[in-house]
Image 1 (cartoon, rainbow, N blue to C red):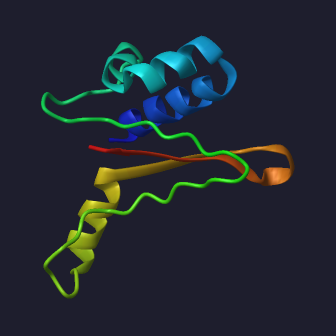
Image 2 (image 1 turned 90 degrees about the vertical axis):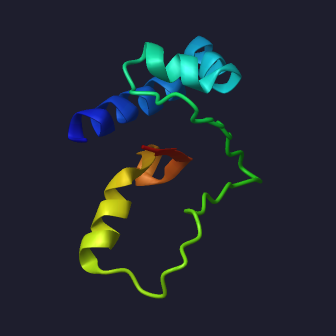
Image 3 (image 1 turned 45 degrees about the horizontal axis):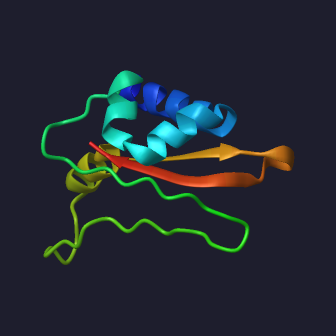
Length: 102
């Protein structure tokens, strides 16, 4: 999973500096991710949203029927969801979040 997270971080960083790649990621996320080396399972739909100075997207995890998660279950779920942010000038997050659920 660590290699996949590194690949996802590379995708995010490239999307902040390469306008053509960013456009392809927005137009066809699954194809762009696969071309960048991300494992894209069949039947999974990807949606790319773009934050602006006056609109920030909050990505919620799926609802669970469990009242409380065990440490092991919580850890497993946390490692399946990758939230990547790229810090900008002064350490501020300027592009947030890109969330890919594996």
